[in-house]
Length: 431
Image 1: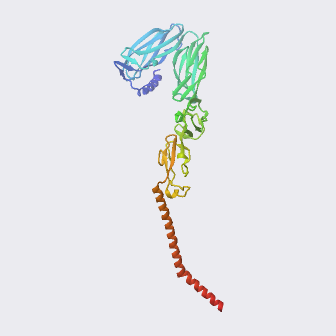
Image 2: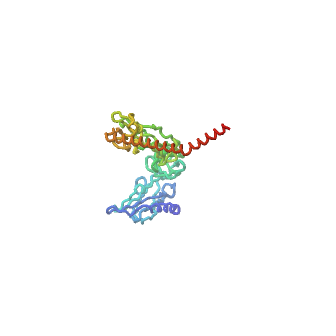
Image 3: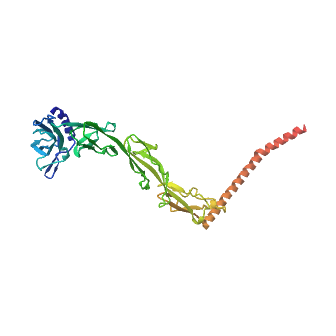
């Protein structure tokens, strides 16, 4: 039995290396005691036989601790042993008991001997088992199975509402009962949550037995799908839902455009989805684990353009419409001057001025701009007429210059050649 227990103890010690043990709270030393294995020999003793009882006491902390181990049969103390277990050490503790006919409840429990020590995990300090002496009994085997053969999940096992221990997926637990007309109840946890977004669920959590047999508690995995929106204040009907592992789940149908009466001039447009922080183009999610989906909405604001006194002589303002939040919109087009119906506008340079900005606006929210044309002053009119006269005189000068050049070309080149052609044609006619 020692050979069989040593590998298990080595595994426990290796796990204890990662835990800080020699912690002190005031004058109390914190330790981590545990009891493993409650073995009896013989397993089915006759009445009057001496039963050897052995248990393994572990000290998973780094500091030595005084330990009291008690052996109890049918809630009667049969032996208490005081000993010191070194840090990260173990001891086998033995007791004997004279077998009495009947089905008995055997319990072993360890605890610090003095109040100077405190156990941080007292739930690991008790082991129980049944012992039948010369009374017919039967075994009932309980198996724990989790989806995919997962051996990491643990469930609590209760026999007749008494805690029997924690058991992992893949384990089989034999339970011995006295043969009688009584029924016994075996129960397990309904849900196991080994990690966030992962839960294992069993439909049957309790069975009643009164004869030899087996039963398997099957745990099926479910994964959490969380659905949110950006921005979160959209208040859409999204949330978190559990789905069986391996199922395909459609993403919720959300409106492509959202407007709220209490927020006029604001619109949210669905741009895309993300799944677990990455852009996601599909409309379904395969539940191979927990997932986090987000509907990404862009915020748009409405731009309203108004003309002062309905003066829209030059309709060059930007079109009213929806623009992305924080975008910059030019509210005065280029060129800023235009042709006025009286023919002077282009020369006089009518200027468009927008409020609140003279040239552009940043869409921090619903925005209204007002555009007005600045009428020319007397000086602007004179300057415009002078500019027009300058352009006309320049045009006339160019025409006169071109006419002089054309006259010179005529007298120097075209007229002599034309005269020569006429003389030749007359001579040919005389001949």
